[in-house]
Image 1 (cartoon, rainbow, N blue to C red):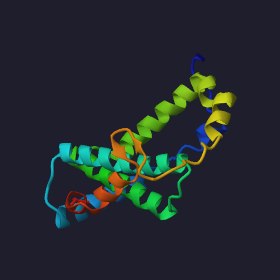
Image 2 (cartoon, one colour; image 1 turned 60 degrees about the vertical axis):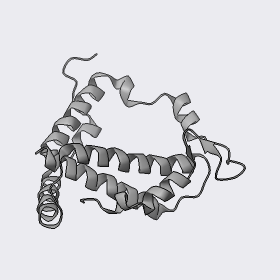
Image 3 (cartoon, rainbow, N blue to C red; image 1 turned 30 degrees about the vertical axis):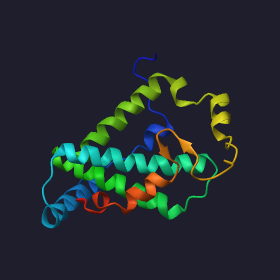
Length: 165
């Protein structure tokens, strides 16, 4: 590990200002408070986990060779962002400050351990390989739920439509 490594080109492109994130978080909080009932941080942590799982499920479907609309990724990514903003607001976390601190820490670690900044070429190549297209019915069971059906049912359930966003 290098002591006090010098910033490099990547270090110089770290965002200098996170005020836009702070403004977004504050405006979002004002809207949420005006439009929806107050919920606990536990509720929002569970909401965040659920929305992140839905986004991951879309990626899994693509990995298996199934078609997924770009709009579905956008929708789920927005849900994850909304759930995160709900959570940090319920915990009174200044997300802009937290992200700025974390990015500086990540950069210090990256500079101190250059091997962590460059991926293993063999691992990168293996990850880039697309898996074979799944054969058979979409109802093939993987894990504890039928592929695709759980997400479709969740999207239609009243529990997922009655969310504080």
